[in-house]
Length: 363
Ligand SMILES: *[C@@H]1O[C@H](CO)[C@@H](O)[C@H](O)[C@H]1NC(C)=O
Ligand SMILES: *[C@@H]1O[C@H](CO)[C@@H](O)[C@H](O)[C@H]1NC(C)=O
Image 1 (cartoon, rainbow, N blue to C red):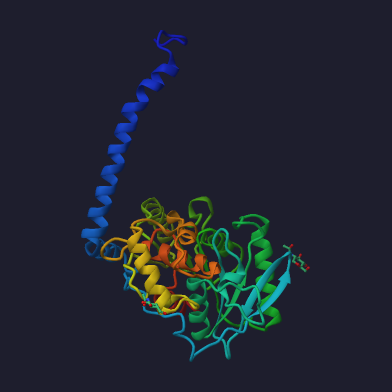
Image 2 (image 1 turned 30 degrees about the vertical axis):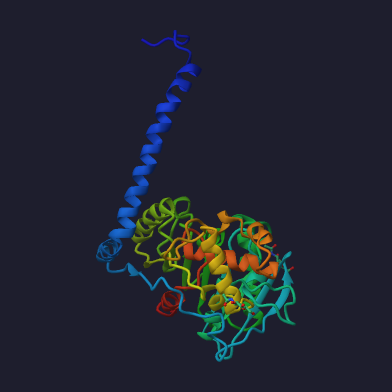
């Protein structure tokens, strides 16, 4: 029988435990890393085929990890001519192409804004045009989708009143532009991904894409008419990958069409940054590539050793006087470095699969 106030002091007991616990958990973490390397680096292909045969409904694409789209790939097809408006306390920026065939709402992640999706222009002087965001929008416009982006009220999206606000804004804008008859899609990344997963219970979407997020499917009542859902994620983020696997099961049990696209790391080349970022020329791109090598940010093969956020690029560049860079481009470069590391970043690399998903779920 145990009594309170027994001889061993619980605080001491905890302290005594903590070292072995630390060793055990470190060992465990190391095992996870080894396991991770084995599963994802060596037997990657096998794993993908396994998931694929799991379910007919699960479409899985392991796209080329190398980004083929250049920042100006869409020049001959479409130009940015966005309209910026203010409604319900926030800003929306939108563009409708000629004879649109669908409407796409895109939700940014934490710290994002609608201005990140559009290039700076007379119509939008404070627009930022981050490389992945702008390519996603260009791809959408080129495919004939009207695009609407909205800024969250705070740093990240919230799932209460803000859901109703965004529902109101989208509904108001659709009826004003007379786009009611068109299919409606949504794509959200990170915080925007969770947000879109909730928004899809409050308004009718034909299909959705949830990027680098698992959604909040474990906390919602999912009806059978929930829209077809494609997860675009980075399996290097192992715990998120596991949650996505669980949420895929929740959706499949309800008979909802689901798909997965996995984004893998890719090596930088001297031209990666000039290929992807307007305003970075080949010379600057090559110099930055050499600088990253010199600093050990990338390995011999050009792979990022750490996430782009971890290398403190702005500070490193301040010390490197021979590279003259418009500091407004640091954010753009870090985004591409995050993308190459493939842990957590907005991505347009898999736009082909994303729009294939939308196009095959229009009715
Ligand atoms: C959004 O703004 C409109 C027009 O001012 C208003 O009627 C509507 O109630 C607002 N929606 C929300 C959820 O606050
Ligand atoms: C960039 O241009 C300068 C001259 O403008 C040249 O000396 C240098 O070698 C170039 N660097 C690269 C990496 O191409």
